[in-house]
Length: 116
View 1 (cartoon, rainbow, N blue to C red):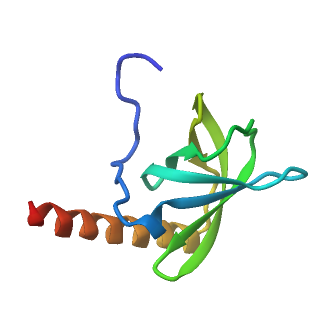
View 2: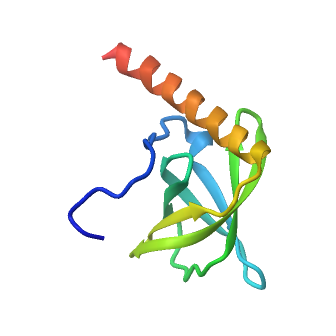
């Protein structure tokens, strides 16, 4: 990546612990737990909770407001335990789930930022 910021959409950082956990599913390999560092409509950055070699494609299980949804993704960048994923052709239903999660995360951020 060059010095330019190539992000295609705004990112939101999770502040509620149950919103942060992601399960990474890889065919023929064991699942890996990760902590979401940020989220956008096109991808997410996660921190692996254990050493693992993640290779594309994967399926990510994300939690939103009492339910779990899955989205296929590919690894776009790795740096130690930090892995960036781009979502692969999410369905309209999954896009709605992601947008709903983003809205809830933004509302929570606004609520917490008013406390200070």
